[in-house]
Amino acid sequence: MVLGLLAGLGAAALFGTAAVLQAHAVRQLPHGTRRLGAFVGAAVRHPLILVVVAAYLGGFVLHAVAIWLLPLYLAQASIALSLPISAIAARRVAEHVTARQVAAVAAVVLGLFLLAGGAGAAGEVRVSPAFVAVLYAGIAGLLMAAALGQDPPGEWFGALSGLAYAGSALAVRGVTWPASWPVVLAAVAVSAFGLLGFWLYSTGLARGSVSAVTAPMIVGQTAVPGLLGVLVLGDGVRAGWWPAVVAGLALATAGAALVGPPQPAPPARAPQPS
Image (cartoon, helix red, strand yellow):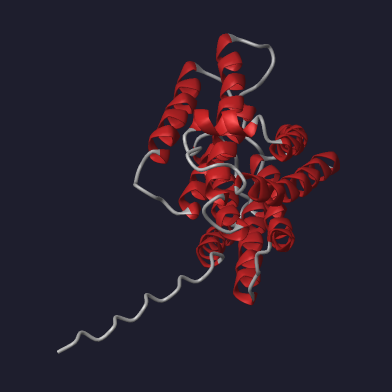
């Protein structure tokens, strides 16, 4: 348990620091790199993005250790600490963090820890063709959602990246031994979800602030696996903790909605000449 928690906290530190470096790097990429292929082609030639990828790989290894050693709730909640790390470090990319955003970050973290506190025993995952089919349907759905709209805000891509990283966490639970063909496909899905999450998060950071884009990502990658763990994978909720779990989900969702910068008021119309 202690090793799993330390691994999760280490992953949070790497993810939170990498997010700010990632924001700085993707804002230097040329326009026209929204599509996945163009983004990958530009990213592999950018030294700072390669550093970010290395940090994410290190964080992924630690995160996988946490997923294998802890209930999915607790493993995901431990990496939620990357949100305040990102918010504080955002000053490095010349972003002002307001008191409202600090309070919203605190609400997200408190909500996620309530979700983690309500976690019971982890369920056993039996990898099946149906489990693998759902994973790849999720990948296809994220690709279609990323193509929606003319100019979606950064928060939209942050939410999609959270779902991608949630898919990665769920797929990791399906990587077991002995290795069968569904297990191999689940392992491939881990990488596919990870690439999608990185691309979607980078796209969001190019359009919005670090805090505003990271909050919905953290909520998605924490709350969604937690709920699916209970409803589908057999994870339990501690006796008497259902109210805390509901309150935690409400706090996390509200905090994510409030962490974004306030929208400027529309300019007043000039009076029409009579």
